[in-house]
Length: 211
Image (cartoon, rainbow, N blue to C red; front, side, top):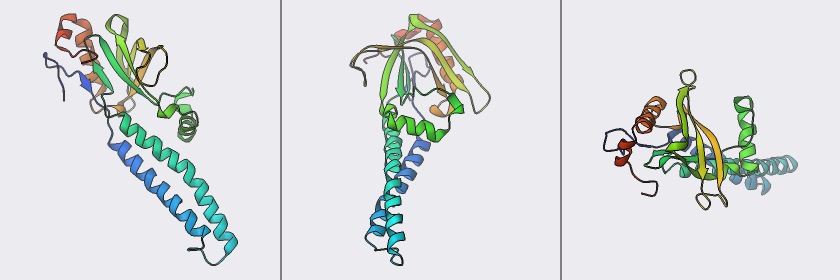
């Protein structure tokens, strides 16, 4: 747990335990489908009716494809969160953007549709690290009902060329994190950002972006 010289925490990691659970669960299901399919096709199991055994084997193998992809996506999400999700630096805020989706609709879009979109477009397998310079940071706040709160950060987010998965500079104007994303409370994170946003001298004790 890293803290600045002022005692205010400046590095915030993602909550990953539920991602591990999901990755293990989907991996076990994928393994079941991958192993069971050939067993039916080879008549090692389901020896009563050849046609039904073949149909079952084909169905299991077909189902194994999306299950393997979801398992792979789940493990990528675990791996991508090894580094801090948000870091307060001398230069500004470093944000780790993982699997951002271009699919609109918010919570109105079913989960399975969103997951399918992330897999098919490969957006779910992308990680980008961006910087919000202090002079471009406009607003930081926590909103929403209990257990559904969001950390909203408004400011110009620069994704430099060659940093992460980018081939050219890209810019966003805002980003939001869910309460389930961080190990720490969103209120604590917002308060820490405000401390350094309001007091430029306090940033001297922070690590540099490349430090």
